[in-house]
Amino acid sequence: MWPFISPINLIRYLFVWRVNGSLAWLPRYPSADISLVLGTIIADRLSTSEARPWRKALALWHEYNKDKRKARIIPETIWPIEAVLFAYPGKLAYGRGEAILWELKLIGESADHGLFLEIILPAIEEAATTTDPRWRRQNSLWGRFDIHSVYAARGATWEPIVREGKLDLRYRPTPAQWAEGLTFDVRPGHVFDRLTWLTPFDLSSTHGDKRKARTFRQKEIPTGEVPTLQRILESLITRMSLFLPGKRNTPDDVWNSLSTEERAFLQAALEQASHIPIHHYDISPAPKNWPGRWIGTQTFPSIPSPIIPYLELASILHIGRQTHLGCGTFTIA
Image (tube, rainbow, N blue to C red; front, side):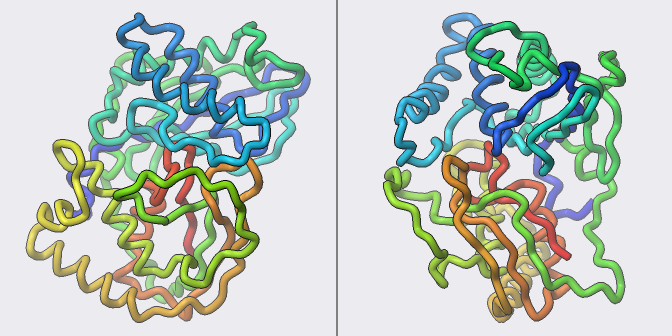
């Protein structure tokens, strides 16, 4: 195991849902719909005291939905736990029997399989068969799918928790198994020079002011906001603060938590990254009513191999704002 990732508590669940209606339409950004529907169902199922933090978080989402102009950004806090909902890129219309794939990542103190079994999975089971008119609109997914399979990541492989609708209660994924066997080794002779954002990103500062709602949409990304490799690594360090014990940790706390050797490797990677220019970029605004701000591709002369492991880790953890809705992940090639 790469030492830098050893303190990261994370459980990755991969869902395979199969449509059981004649047709199901997904919204253009499915993660937002999944978050709202499942979050609401969870809040409805909990006791009054247990539901309070869920309802408080969801209130921001309901306030957003009342704004018909949709001038404001989607709120960042939608669930009161640290979780990422990442819907795999796909089409919008699905016929009977077709599979929809998405990933749930439980992070830090929320990386608890008991939480998954007791709170999240029952809500998904209800969403699969719901007749609630709030969700069961014409050709919507809700109430029209089966939970075909659920897997948990162990390194680069996926192990079944639910197979053909049957739950294996003996299987207990741990918050460390996601990293087993991951070395992030670079293939000899392979040159990485392209980074493609799979979901929108917003790498603006997450400290200090919580960012007032923007009432304007920029048509082009300012040159200074195009993510450099150094900025991406800095965003990873900020993200890593979630995994340290306690609350309100800062990037300085991440640095202080590293061994002397790890600190030297990371500092060297940042130094290399600071000298790599952006060769070209094709980045446009995220579609209206999507989270995040920008999406697209960017290329570099080449990405040095010592930087690759940190980029791979950033893509798994997601970086920047609105990571709950899957923002801030990418591929490199």
